[in-house]
Amino acid sequence: MQPKFEETHISSDEDLLCLPYSSGTTGLPKGVMLTHKNLVTVLHNFTDVMKENIYSTLVPSFLPCEQNSILFLPFYHMFGFGTLLNGIYNRETIVVMTKFDFEKFCKYIQDYKIRIAFVTPPVLVYLAKNPIIDKYDLSSLEIVLSSAAPLGKDLYNEVKKRLPTLKHVFQGYGMTEISFFTTLGSIKTPIGSVGALVNGHELKIVDPETGESLGANTEGELWYRSDQVMKGYLNRPKETAATIDSEGWLHSGDIGFIDDNGHVYIVDRLKELIKVKGYQVPPTELEDLLLSHPKVKDCAVVGIPCEIRGEIPKAFIVKKCNTLREDEIHDFVNEKVTKYKRLKGGVSFVSEIPKSPSGKILRRMLR
Image (cartoon, rainbow, N blue to C red):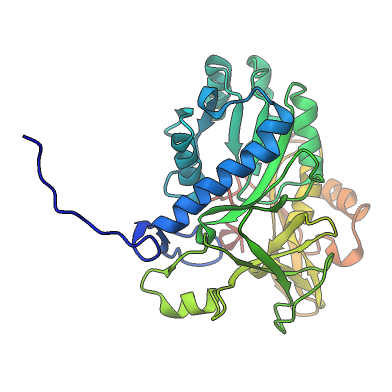
């Protein structure tokens, strides 16, 4: 006899489907209330844009149901959970790593003939600089999609040089509060951009001080509006009201701009910008530069207090070569940046950079 269950009525707009938590890179993690409508919308949007931007243009023979992908991102993070849902929705074969290990990552790509990988920029640093990849055949890997943190041009070029059979490294952008992705690049997207808006989204760039809407090619805070925007933060009405305004715009806390062709660029987190004598210095700009140094394995830049300048940039560096000296770093940076962006806060050499499971730098642990 079939068991009888009480019929349940679900409101797509109101009832929760999952409760992931924000990453907590700039404060305490908050429960993000995502509804059935949020997740169904994002699955349709992401599947459509992947087909349009990537599969149909780059590899026409690429059928999601025939592909092998690899996933190491934690499922309690929206990048990992969203990628998992997308794979199930499209009947993909997914190789799941219980814990990230770079050598196993390379071995699984070789053994399972992985064609697509969803990664964060720290993994791209490994692909660009770690000698382990020379032990494995990674020629099956055709597509890499990077998100969760900005990707610099130098790192992109290093990865492409190291993996010549890789067709492209795409970049996307999203937030837990927007249920996964809200922009995704295509083969025509300029390197450094996170792509164009996914269907069904509105975006405006706003001066964070005045709330005034800004035009193209002008940096400001990114505000989004769509059916993917969360219901709110669990038991946090004040934080919800501060993040989603009365017109439904979600204030992302990210600084960026949109060019004349609709390509979106992320500069940095609003709370992470280093303010030197009134000038704004994005830490990621200096990090991208430092990662291009042949003796640097990994790095992070934070602002530290200064009585004269307000804040000054300081670098934390993991050496790739033990002979690397602080003066080498200063000479390297000073040749390439304007004076107020120089590392006046100094350089500290560390064994590792603290990061969240999704790969975001935990700058608060370095200050």
